[in-house]
Image (tube, one colour):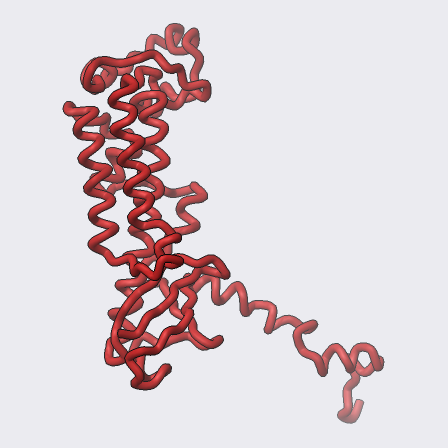
Length: 258
């Protein structure tokens, strides 16, 4: 098997096994799916940690308001009584006013946080150091573990606007967030090796040969990033001859007849 060490920028992401005969179209799609799947796991882990500390997310029109403002505006969270954690809630106020403060008890919190740790370990970047490849089945297993833990602690489910519920139903809205910048849509994904883009219409062996024991480092990025990275090549200062002419005072000289 050929082993690809996938990086984004200089940061290690995961190991991926394939064959020299594999089409790059398929390889790129699989790598993008794993990469984005790992991001989804990380987002869910972060939100579940908040759920364990402060309970369910308030409706959007109540988030960030003080208790006095909520009373003054006569706003009511209809989901508070529907989405109660197993064993009853414990009051842990959310200082930023995003979650309702009706947190799971310590036993249920432990269920959530233990599962978060297990899910993180399954898709961790440290797997590459241990020479373990992260495959899509591992990403799905991590997501299933998180989903199962949430169902144990919140058997009646979460509000439809809670980010965890939205992630579980694949309708997360990342627009305007830092997280959206990390995601690489499959159709915008590029794979680079040895300063060359690996074209989708080719096979892996067109670039690395037919040795199935090859190990290489590849970089994943968006098409837009590649365009931004190369934009400086169009500028005057990137042209060494232009720079030299400028120092010699030879710019803007017309050689033809006046």
